[in-house]
Image (tube, rainbow over all chains, first blue to last red; front, side):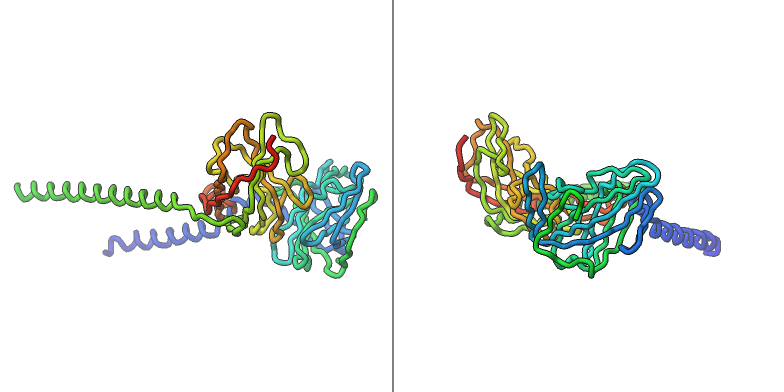
Length: 187
Length: 190
């Protein structure tokens, strides 16, 4: 018994230490996840590679625009959210293809591909360094999700070791309207 | 000497019996699992079925000569059109509904193309808590004889917060959750 005591005294703490290390190791998905920057709608939020300033957040039951000279009207079972913003790139030419709204319940709503051909859609543009680019992002979500929304932008969806900007949107700036015209120069 | 011999014999006997028992248990379990897997619950048409990421209620099926968005179908093909209500019950927008419904009694059916009824256009993402009326279209050879009752199998998916490879969250297939039998109405024969 006395001969085994030192061995037991070594093995038990070592096993405990290893178990603790294993339990607290951050998962791969977190280690290779996005590099997050968050800010508020009132300020310009900057990351290393790109920056965003959200101008207006509009809520509408129907959106309307002209596509190839033909009028398009889109209805939704929830509500349309149109976010107008200005993007800046700092290091190189880049698109900002991924835009997601996190709703009140924490569910994430990607930008609507139904309105993908509306004029001025930012995810269809590329941002050149030194040339601020303005445009809109269009989302579709249930009405009760529109309180305390957060806009999340990145170059591609599910960025890995790339910048991701989160912007908390203001609640009172979102007054709903029946119909919203999206013109050539935004909303 | 004899005692030693009988002890060795007993050990061998026990090992053999243990092995046989393990084999029998394993066989019984796999038979049981097979039986469980074969019993897919049958549901009525227009019944909402929860299949992990999606909630779907299939309402009717037709054979058609045109796509739901007005486009023509490929020459030498006809379209099996299935109408349904589809809701995303996961936490994020998704367009991964391609494997949700399979035709159980049509051979060599390719993946369906989904259309959004509201826009008469191709369906992209479906957003959480926003059910939509959609149609799924399978293009099959025009010469293929189709059954009068279409059997649709709804495939489930399971969410793992940490998968076995990257410890990353993801959805994984979990087998069929329901089967719906629908009369296949002939719309416009090609």
